[in-house]
Length: 274
Image (cartoon, rainbow, N blue to C red; front, side, top):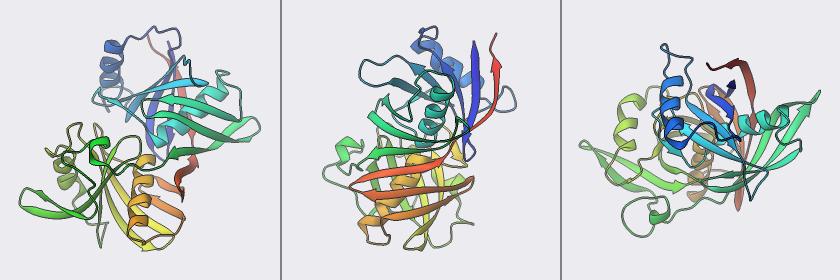
């Protein structure tokens, strides 16, 4: 079984064509845990499977490093679109991808018939607690969250998957590794949550570190970048076009009713599983 190893700003994935359904649901979770284990295997943040779709050009299934299935992944879908184009699964400059978060439209930028970057319509952010999902009624905008005796002001939303955003003054020395897992597994989030720690540089720039659900801190997170921009817009901290600085590099996010994510996608190598 052939695979590609890919990354979007260091957020890395195995990508496999599973249109023949050779890998079952149970096997997919097990395979993700095995392959993504760093130092003991090839290592990655997740596994992406290409499947047939009755509604879109192709279907993307996303399995985190811990084997859990995710609804959506901004860096992953850019890698996935490049993989599908360059492997002749979908030879279109604009392709639709079915995900657990709905059908997403992508636009490919090509150079010498290779995909260099991908723009994704991530849809509108969802603030209703029940749809994030998060316990309680209404919305959670700039509310206090108690974590082991510490208080954090958070804004929670879904960008196809759950996010909890908190703004900080000095991101570089913030204890992400300590606070991130506690918020991820907080009892308010029945399916856990991704966590963004955000420093506003100016109205068009953010610095973001992300603790990803099922992965830990990653070098980049596309949905996390979108969640940070959406939350910043709620407080009128940001303009409509924002450059998001992550540990692995920069992403461009536009917010005009829908969130649009633009960034690179790269192939690292390809191999065969035996």
